Length: 318
Ligand code: F6P
Image 1: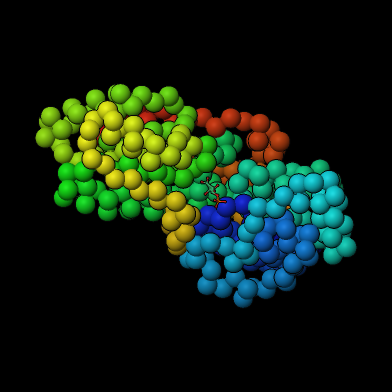
Image 2 (image 1 turned 180 degrees about the horizontal axis):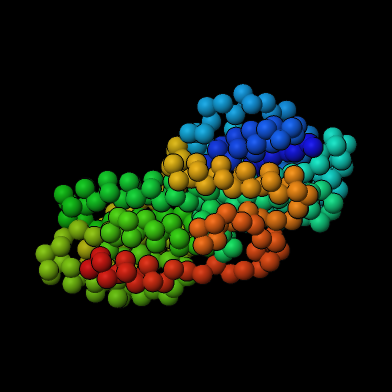
């Protein structure tokens, strides 16, 4: 069997561990494995590289993706799709394993619908794929954000300052919530829940009265710019503040052991699926178990925000 593997969309720590597992598990099962460079674009430009066991040596600990990634608009057009299918057929590729977020998972579905066996592995720091408890890269991003917040807290405490920190996540507050709970942020503002800056200000003033002179407020990027929130808080509290946008820092770095294991297990499951001829599936973790679901039903599911964790963060950060 000839299997192609690609990483697409925003990179996520652990993608290399997933590519490594596809290559090694595929070769273990007597498959030929090809890496496609720069996501779906590489199918269109025919950027296929034969992968050997050694092609993925020393990559398990590396952030980013050795196959590189891209967001490809042409692939989404009917002409682009036809070209992709033709290129895969000409090379006699039997199956494609796509590692990426929701757009990439949709791309896998599109290939599968057009007759190329395709399976998706959820790789995104955003943890916004409802069908799986966790996506590859989320744990590392949360740890990176938590470390950054810890550092900012040192200087916030020394200067008795208020810091507003903007975190990634697109439309999801998952990174902000997890990092906020882990780092004891005084307030967390996420797109999933309404927020009230008057209430945030009252909490800040209450803390100051009790003698707590520094605070950290996390804002998920899907809510608003941290600069806007900072300006609004300044008006309400008259307290000086500083803004930090953590940005792409959250996408880089060596994956945590958790992400390496998750990526290896999910990718191994994906190879099993293509060997069994099961396409249109998304590998997921549900109730702590590695399994797979139909891509179309997975993408129709709406992510459930962990309100319990949010309430706990609020109680504990008082
Ligand atoms: O999906 C991952 C992510 O990092 C989001 O959190 C963020 O909104 C987006 O990608 C940023 O995309 P880009 O790297 O294209 O600016």
